Length: 324
Image 1 (spheres, rainbow, N blue to C red):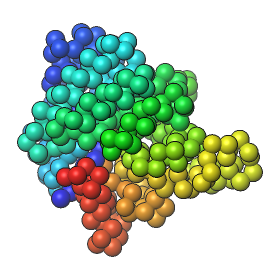
Image 2: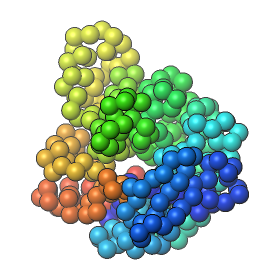
Image 3: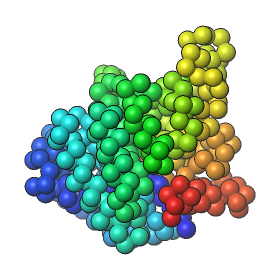
Image 4: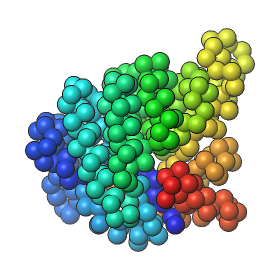
């Protein structure tokens, strides 16, 4: 079974009165493409189906994908809402995702209110009891705070205890740097930079050593993480503050992460597989966005890996992590 582990959806319940009006996305169609309007922002980067799961599954099947692991559009993970409102939004979304997964053709990752780690832990425990849900998607940063911060430890403890798969996705906001507002750099450069920063923060803070059974999947091949592995290694060797919270060092932590295949570069993807191991790489498309891959399985096959390694990446790893 070939599994796409990076596929976004706007669940229908998010566009109903069950959700506060200012958190409801609106969908329109222009020149045959879906347009999303949300909180004053207009999204025109959608190139495939975003709401109808049957259509999404059919489109994926054309590329040989058998099973989708759905996750929310990251803007609908409500870390900017008040806590009570955020819990309500998460519950609506998670229950809708669970219903969508009832037929078995898709699985899903839910949403948690990570602005309050204790509440996020409670919601993670709740969603993990819902049929079809296998974990949660979380943003790479929350109100300027990155994921290795001690404030998030209650959530990581719950993630380990429940066996949830935690999908770390950049916030699509870059870093608020003026340079990233030009030339689509907030996406092409800002997003992978943010993933690299939060993954390095998790590693250096010793979170993966403290919770050794954590299962964390990084979007976009880990972003820029592999490009800085040498510098992380060097800092650990020469600077006491770089090893203040980690005994094992950056390479041990980085190889604990799981990575999707959305790199858009064959050499980079081959390096990722060589470094992390084929058992830590999962097929991903980033549907339905223009920065995604239309033929992710073919990109993996182009690496000419062993049959066993190719099988792991195309679906074996996901099937194992998701208990499919």
